[in-house]
Length: 121
Image (cartoon, rainbow, N blue to C red):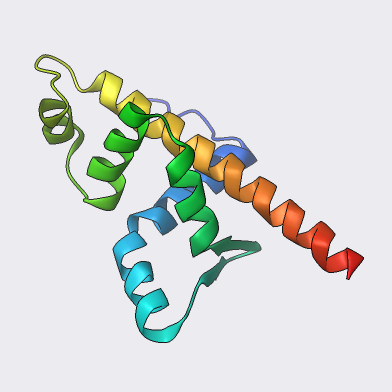
């Protein structure tokens, strides 16, 4: 039996956030068709446009890995080949993980700014 290490609360939230991101194309259609630009999952609220802005800030390789794996739903091995990695997919997995963490931090910052702005008005 293998032991799985416990995820911290933040890691659990980031994992849930990644699941939300994997529904990006469906969410994009909801924005276009029904103007639904915010999703609430538990106690977290995510804004589609914050995520779009965050994606624009990613370095090229992180963005490419994120697009291929999260948005397009490709397997890490397939994404690695498309990105020019022949032997291992680990670098691509790391690019994707870093991208998701950066997007999580970006959207958290945007949510804090929105709360401050709402409280000030």
